[in-house]
Length: 209
Image (cartoon, rainbow, N blue to C red; front, side, top):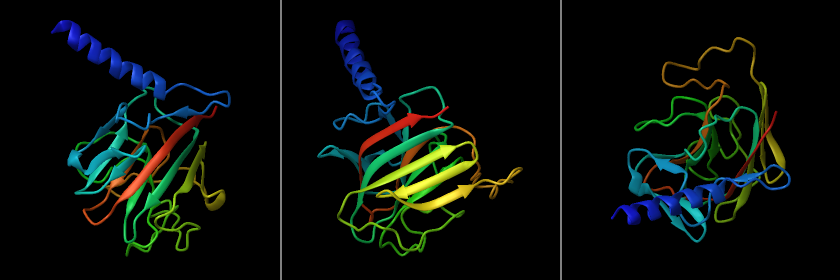
C-alpha cells in the first residue's frame, strides 16, 4: 500500500514538474493537456473537466485556481487559447487567491464573453475598463494575452490591444466584495453558470522582473 501511494504521489509530482518546465524564452506551461495537476477547483468541482487537451467548464459556479507554484505572480505575461459556445460567460482571474466559495474577491477578472447578455465582453478588465466589441467569435479559439508590469495592465485578444490601463496611485478597493487592485497572487478560470461552456488550452506564463 505504501509503495502504491508513493508511486501515485511521484506521478502527480512528475506531471506538475513537467507542466512548469521553462522554455528558452522564459515561458512556463501551466497545464499538461491531460490532467488537472497543479489546479484546484472551488465549490462545484464537477463543473470542470479535461477534454481534447483543454480545461472545459460547464455547470454551477466554480473557479479553477492555479496552485502549482507557491511563489506568487506579480509582473508577468500570461497567454491562453480560449473558446466559448454561443451565449457563454467565463473569465480569467489574475492576482487572485484561492477561496472555496463565491466570486473571487482578490485580483482582477479578464472577461471571457462574446455573446452572453452581460455587456462587458471578452478582454474587459471587468468593472474597470470594459470592452463592448471584442475581436473574436464563439466556436473559434482566440488568444487571450494579459500583461502586468508594475501598475500597468495590457490585455490583447488575437494580438489586438483592447485594454491599456494604469492603476492610479493610492487606488482604493473597488468595494467590500471586490478588491480590483494590483498586488500579487495566482490565476483562476471561471465556470459562470450551467448555460455557459468555455475551453482553455495552451496555458502559459512568463514572469517579468
